[in-house]
Amino acid sequence: MESEKKDTPYTGIGVNPAHRLVQDFFQEIDCGNIGAAAFVREAFAQEPEFWKKATVGFRRMQQFNIVGEKLYLLWNDCCGRNTSKAVNVMLVKSIEDIFAHLDYEHGRGIPFEDDDYE
Image (cartoon, rainbow, N blue to C red; front, top):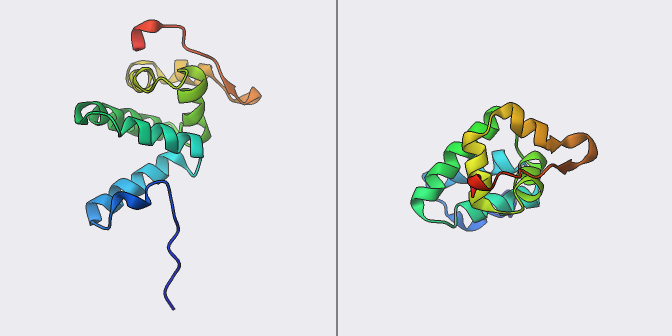
């Protein structure tokens, strides 16, 4: 009996083993959160130079368990769905500052006021 294939936001990536690694990475950072998946898809829909930066930022967030819902809060609440700003925040802000903006106790993120991250 053949196992049932689970559809994910990244199902269309392909069956190439390299594509599978990318799909696994995406799933590790979005943790099934639809909003985080939208952020990841938006970041990787940009030019190659941008998504190279995004990959570094996502890996940094992954190291500190800022994945899934927390990643969505960062993009949606803290950066107003501005993907460029969110990627720059992931790259340059201290982890302590990012956690301070993720007011997880109240389920919301505190916006970064700095416009120089856009």
